[in-house]
Length: 199
Image (tube, rainbow, N blue to C red):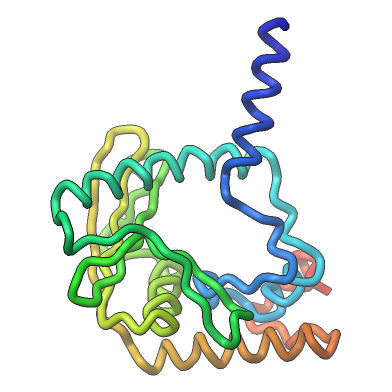
């Protein structure tokens, strides 16, 4: 066995263990801030996950696992690790990075460098991710933890559950699921689906 073969095998197992699927037949509640047409299209056709995305996600998962260990050391028994949430008769699913009692969702985001850390507030899609998870998981609040893979720098943000946003997440999930069941894509809400090929 030569070095190239070892490299190829390492990359193959990394891609297998990254935890990312192609998105078919699966609605991720953490993505309910995105356009419903895009979400429905990806359920039917897959999301075109590249090998590069899989290897980057593997590194992000390593950072998340390390942070979860630190949270366990910090909070002990009041912190519980990640779990999968389900809603709408298990047609929508999402993943937490843990919970702090009483009833606080933990979401971890690993970013490649310090410049990618949020500046003052979280990106809109991360806010919607946490609102969808809080809605279906019945959490009252959330702490989002960002860590730079380059320096280890950490930023944290907290949000409370916003029932109006949670209801929008549920309505969008229901719209996408019904559209896929009927074999039709819902209308585009972002104005960019046509140029992105979600026809």
